[in-house]
Image (cartoon, rainbow, N blue to C red; front, side, top):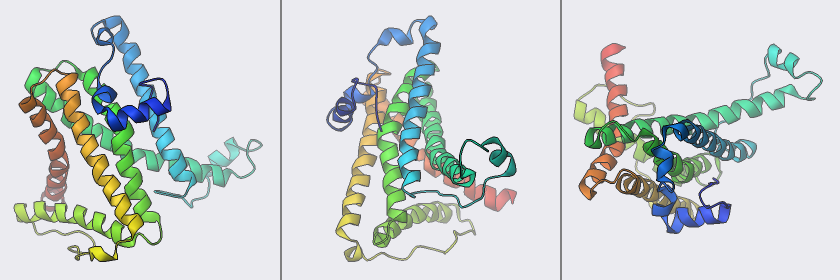
Length: 264
C-alpha cells in the first residue's frame, strides 16, 4: 500500500522495510499542538487511510482473491446505472467485493486503535489520540494489510491448501485454548483442528508463511516504536501497550464464547 511519508512509493517502502521508526514517527509535532490544524490533520489521516484501504481491496477484488459476490444487482442499482454501464451486475459485484474486502481490514484497524490508545490513555492520560491514530493508520496501511493479503491469497490459491490449513489451524487452536481455559461447552464448526504435515507445504506456501511472520513482527514492533517515539513512553510502558494490543484478540474470543454460552 502506498504512503505519503516520503513523497514517493519507493521511499515509503524503504522506510516501511528498513526504517520503521521513521515510517511511524510524527514528523511535524506542531500539527498535533495547534488546535486550528488538528481537524485538517485528522481529515488528512482519514483520507489517507481510506485511500490505502481502496488500494488494498481493489487488486484483491479484481483478481478474485478474498470475498467475491455472485449476486445480481438490485433493481434500484440497475435503474440508477442504466445508460451508464452495459452490465450493472458486474459493477454491483465489484462494489460488493470491494466493500467486503475492505470491511475486515477496517474493523481490525478499529480494534487495534481502541486497544492501542486505550492502553496509552491508561499509562499517560487521555491526550494524544491523534498521534495514536497516526501510528495505527501507518502500521495498518503497511503491515496489517500485508497480513490480510497473504492470508487471503493462501485461502484462495490452488496448491496452497496445506499452508492455508496451517494458518487456519493456528487460529482455531487460539479459540480452543480460550474455550478450554473458560471450561465452556462450545466448539467451532469442523471441531478441533487436525495436525498439518509441514512437509506437504509447497515452497510457495512456505515463502508466504515466512512473509506473514515477518509482517506480524513488523506490525507489532512498529506499534511499539509508535508508543516510544510519538508518545515518548519508556520501554516498559511501550511493552505494556503492545501487550494490550496483543490481548485484544483474546478479549474478542472470550466475549464470543461468553455470548454463545450465557446470552444465547
